[in-house]
Image (cartoon, rainbow, N blue to C red; front, side):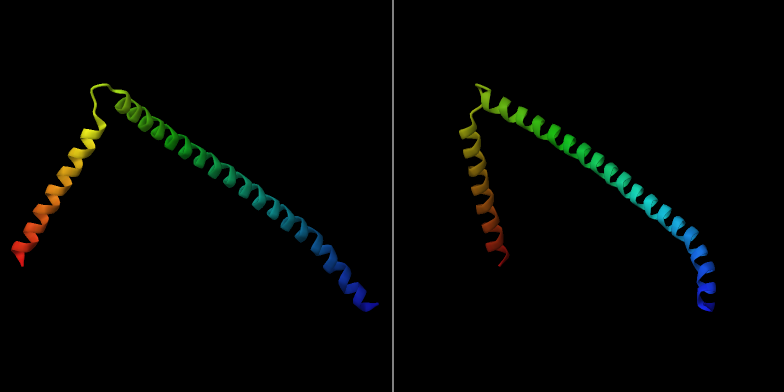
Amino acid sequence: MHDLGVLVPIFALMIPIMAIWTKHQRQLAEMGIKSTAQESAEKAAQYATRIAEMEDRIRVLERIVTDGGYNVASQIEALRDTRRVEERLEDQRETSRN
């Protein structure tokens, strides 16, 4: 019976401690929800920016392809020829160094 007398004040003190702990846990949960919502909004803004950039690139590509005076095949071949010339020059430089 003596042990029960000690436990009553301990239980009485535990009630406010539990209330404070519960309130703290609720606040932490709310902060987590707010930060998650903010992160989602930031990601949505980044995606929107990226989509806008890609749409701009697509418009440029459409303009290039549909432009009647633009010859894509000849441009590609010119780039290939330029690469071949650059590779030959690099090979000659390496040979002259050795």
